[in-house]
Length: 193
Image (cartoon, rainbow, N blue to C red; front, side, top):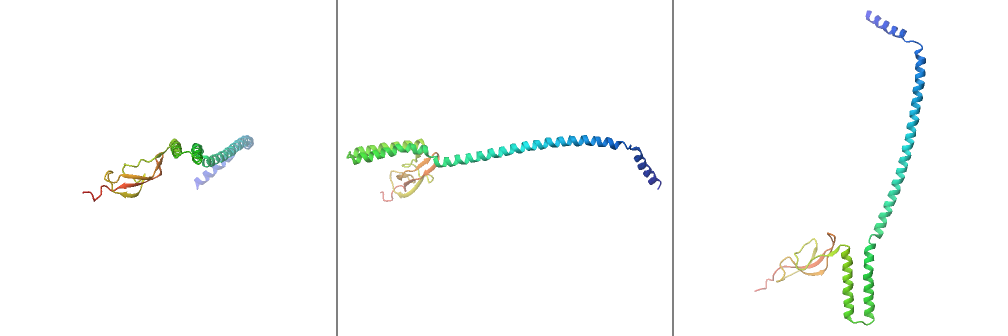
């Protein structure tokens, strides 16, 4: 019990040591601290307002960018083949001229020559757009670029090689645009002596 009395006296002595005028100093210090905190709060509120405005501007710019990108994408889809079509229009003009000259009574040789020149012009236009024909006759059969329609016996063409082409195939860059329809060799006939 002696210890408990001693501890009580220590706490009572501590209360006696604190001056009463300390609370007045504490209030003055608290007022300065409050005004500092209010200024800091106002600065942070202003910073938040500025950041919010910046965010809203950025969001609006992104929406505008998204709309422009979507419009560009629609235009690309809609007019993406415009350059190709401009290249093909002279071919149409030449075919119309060939038909007109054949109706006016020009000879068949003139018509055939005009169509051959038009075909040459068309294949040139396709080549400029990286559309090239698939090599077929005499080549080994390739199922990625050839479509076998029939098989024929041939003494001149080796087995599993292309004998004839029914419809030409085309590549666009390295991708098959249309497979070539071909006949392939089965090798020599069994009837040979």
